[in-house]
Image (cartoon, rainbow, N blue to C red; front, side):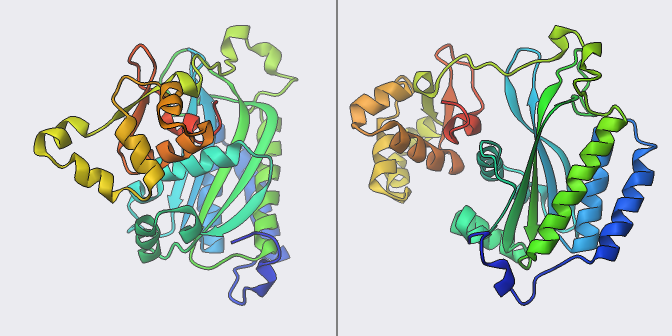
Length: 313
């Protein structure tokens, strides 16, 4: 579902009044004064969005750099409207891949049905918990985000802010509601900057160069080696052919059959005569089905989601 021209057609859309927006902004102004970490603001915002606007699940995702220079997605806050939703249903590789795609783009809100984003099985499970639509808001800033509050490492790894907010909803929201949530998020980050909870050009000088870690990429996707997660057991039980048959199309089956734990992605391109994008698309499907993982030439497992979603090439 496109986010353009569809909101006005939804008769049951959740919306927001000027009074509700003013109340939340007033509460936010009072709350920010007492907090000591930006993650407290993320959690507060997630609760308010879920409760005031009947959003089934609210998630705050950010990119977080490590002291080694690697970067990965970090779930900074998650709130469910009801206690029945299993976290694994909304915090998994499929969701992470969607967030990776969002963070590689520059748009604000979008809205889609879960059927357009997830496999039929996953969409059916989400629907059982009244999650029929998914919306997201991307907010980027030159401000530097501190490590998570739960982080126990000694060394700071401040990271340029790229905040992706995922919303799972029963009904499609109105455009006014999405714009209102975006306004709340932007004002909240402005307040966090003023409180010194985000590093800005004015206070970044308080950090040493080593405190600010810009992600660096050691290998390209073509260098990595895909390995089948369950191949040894399947070969032993004679069910490997059955697994290949269950895969969705000929291209994915061809890529899966070519994976031997030794060939790199570049080797797979040569042996299958497929393009990089075709290989990437097939590996994404295999990753979502928990059939493959990616490894560096030296044997170190990598963040497969980032590579296969196009954020890293």
